[in-house]
Length: 75
Image (cartoon, rainbow, N blue to C red):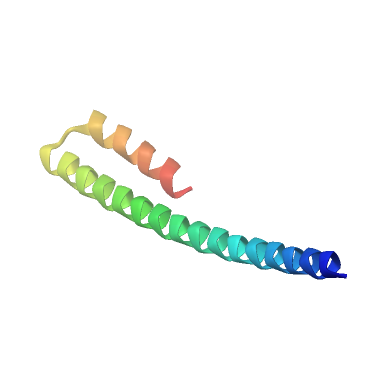
């Protein structure tokens, strides 16, 4: 009887542990999504700034290269 009770406690503890791990995984995934979005937005802003600079300097080759990168990024 005592062994049954101990086994049930172990099972409950394992279930709780797995539920906590699932919650942690979701939080980690959400945090990674936020970081990825921030990185994406930063890259877009940087490319826009570089594109503007290439227009200001009249560097057509650089402009074309950067706009191709931009189009791929925001696709």
